[in-house]
Image (cartoon, rainbow, N blue to C red; front, side):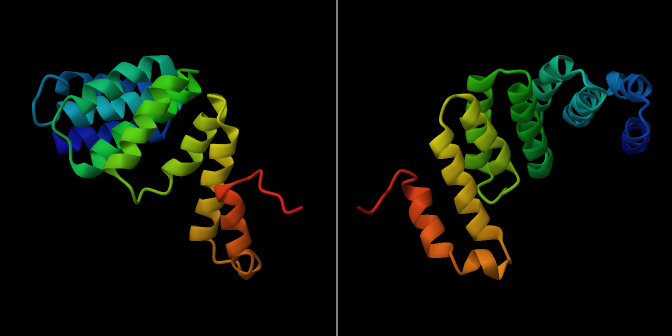
Length: 161
């Protein structure tokens, strides 16, 4: 089974999406490989620009046994795809679940911030991005303003008169 999944991944990476899915589809009913197969099918649809087709496969993957890493990939993939389809409220819920289960997954924050913007919460989006910037940067030019950036991240409308 692992050889089939590896072959399907290789096909997907070369843009042979239908062939990749054809190899994975028979594995969907298997308790051991079904979740991984569904995840890779979802990715193939996403990579092909067929996001609407990917959603049900992400959901199917999440209903199966997955490793911690695979579950993260399925949640993050689903949330990102929901957002790209304009399903902002669903995406927000899925992003929040992803961040709850994987609090150290910094890669989620920019996409979550985009979703916050999409649902009309731009201040929270900018605040998240500023906080992330300060916590992840190695740039001395940013580090020297860390205190001020974090102060504004808490309250973007703060002024001193």
